[in-house]
Amino acid sequence: MKPVVTEKAVMMVELQNILTFETTKNKTKVQIKKEVEEIFNVKVKKIRTLVRANKKYAYVKLKKEFPAIDIATKLGLM
Image (cartoon, rainbow, N blue to C red):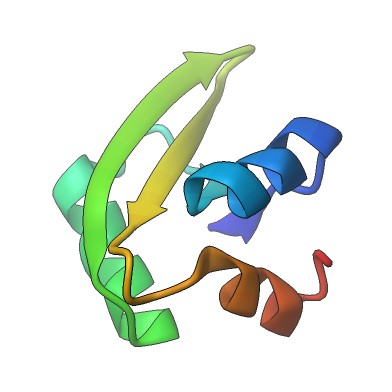
């Protein structure tokens, strides 16, 4: 799983508390949620996925008490 750094992804971090990751096509939402919660020590509210051009993207919305901008700063996205 690797973070996506685009203008849209950065706007989603700032405005909607959503992190965007590129992941393997065979990962389920449950597996993605577990991985994000373990790696970053946060709680996930919701996950949306998108498959485009043979790649799978996961949009991970964090609960309000866990600001996505903190995680993005640690990853060097901001």
